[in-house]
Length: 194
Image 1 (cartoon, one colour):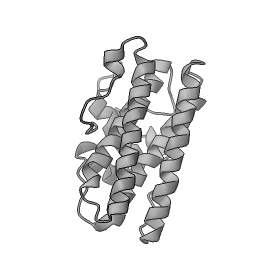
Image 2 (image 1 turned 45 degrees about the vertical axis):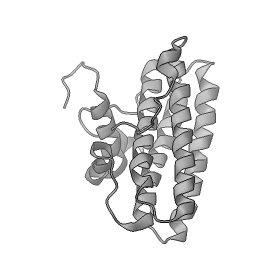
Image 3 (image 1 turned 90 degrees about the vertical axis):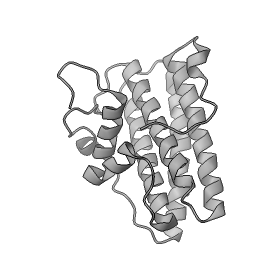
């Protein structure tokens, strides 16, 4: 819980995103990214949860009216990538008979005290910071989930998506910190953050 008038920490934000996404059970991937054993379908479900929230967050950022003419096309392009990730994961999960996570919405995303509500973004900095945190959460879910996948084709697809998430984070960092290349360059070893 944060004090009124103070900015949330990254951990509070990601915890809030997880709570908003999937209720109390969703907090597990934000607090400790390792995926519980449960076969490929469970790993895919966790990946799909975070990707669905990414699509939701990108749509909300675009709808917020906070993005500059320079940021809008980048955010729109990344949204298209995230939507493709969702389609790929839905197909893979459906082929394995896995259950699908509940789609995020404004009511769940902003209903927890001490969390940032993606439906109430007030500045470009806030919007881009939210999206960057979402990308880092995506990276963490893939980083920890890849070692659990048994199907080599799924592992390859997951690693390709994780690489795309790292590229998204670099692009968003560049928008958030224009002219500061050292802040936009991703780490050599991408693990994500929770």
